[in-house]
Image 1: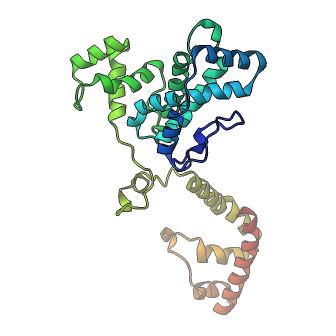
Image 2: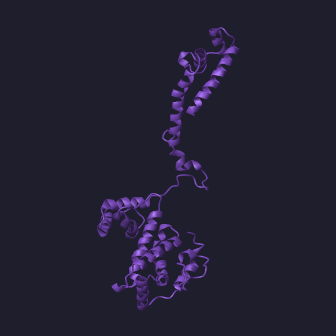
Image 3: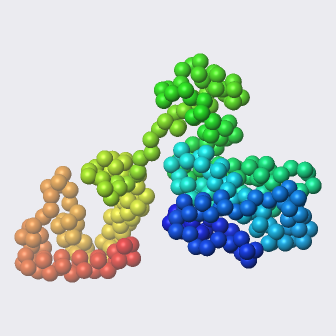
Length: 296
């Protein structure tokens, strides 16, 4: 989502809370911070209206009044290199899920209940988009992904004591700590050269390519082998003995057999002129071309 069109961040509707078109993210943040907060009584009333009557205007007002909470929480995740507007957008999705599940009878304010849903949605977004190769899949890895940076005291590699301390405090294995530190410390590399690269030869696509294993080339190679094998044999079988002898002598003899014979060699063998051999050869090749068409 582009930050130049931040209106997409704001739930639309006819509750009277819809904001005018905004030009940038700063304007959006300023606007949501001006939205009025709800009293506990009004919040409970709106929640009951939505729960009991499916009143969408009530749900919309609950969402709008808590948009500033999403902005505040999303700032905690700016260190992952993802656009702030995208983090807010995902947090807004979590907020709407929280409003849908909020029960006013439990005596808990929506702000406390919604924090979990907002963070969960932002976490999922970061894990989906932070890298092409996912760095956190298990529960322990996810915990480390979002906490390891704050546990490190400097930019250096963790010592054995640090690993044990972090593993103990987060209740994970030492091996998980070491693995996540390695993953977070690795650099991503584009497989193909970027448009501003000065030397394309350094892109992995240039030196990781394996022609012998590339699928299309494997298929082409198999088709070529089939063509050279059964295809040529079938085409030769359709020739008369003299034509076949001429084609084999001119095109299919190995160096071990003395190599290809000349037109004059074959002319002497069959007692005709070299021109006649050339004509027979041309006619035979044309016939073979038609036979090989079904193997192409």
